Amino acid sequence: MKQTTTGRYSKKILVSILAIAFIFTFFSCAQKASFQTSSVVPAARGDVKVKKDGNNNYEIKLKISGLAEAKRLEPAKQVYVVWLESEGHTINNLGRINSSSGLLSKKLKASFEAVSPIKPIKIFITAEDEASVQYPGSHIILSTNNF
Amino acid sequence: MKKMIFPIPVKNIFLGIFATTLIFSFSSCAKKTAAVAKTEAPAEIVLPENKGQVQIKRDANSNYVVQINLRDLEAVKGIKGDTKKAYMVWMNADGQAVKSLGQINSNTGWLSDKSKAYFEATSVFKPTKVFITEEDNAMVKKPGAKVIWFTGKF
Image: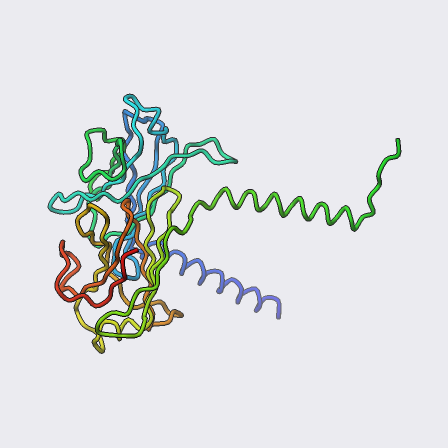
């Protein structure tokens, strides 16, 4: 009899935890967008997550796998640069992203984090000769659709 | 040929050293951040006491990471209570226009210290100075006249 009561309680706790996890999944306010398939780096796939942080800025997180090194592109480039497009089509350089194979994995992985006070409508990556460029070049490697 | 036989505790010590070396070599490969500059913010005009610290690091992508820790942000702001102003963090870099890094607000987390503020942003340019201004909204492209906190030149 006692066992049944304990079982009922643990079931309730489990259901509550599941419900909370479910609510958090839906209400975490994170937007997720996948990069479109690229003709330049067809093996590359990844996504962008955008959510508001504690300072009311937009936190942008990128995860990409299968991204060939910029030096192996045709024509060869030095770096990949992440750009943010906002409403009004203003474009900002968010920083460089490196593709590297880890010690335990041969997949060419890249990850990147940045914050912006401006709401992004699109994130894209270009291959450039230097990271400190003010405007994106014509070699767009990966891009999301508009959020 | 005499074969060396180690007693069990010695064997364990060797194994421990080997495991520690292995772990250290793995973790040192994973973390590629290194502080290149660290400065205590100098006393700013309104508040003579030192209220914060800025750290500049490099991330795994070789971007510069700007981390700001402020104590008693309300005092730094020079105001009491909630306002609808935005507190914007800006940076200067050699040969570049002033860049907006984002907003900074007091911590809001359930268990966090509300009197403190933490901010982190990345930039492809090496920052030479960081400062905070009070603005009417976060969308401004140039810093306004009211500078509430600033560092010296790195």
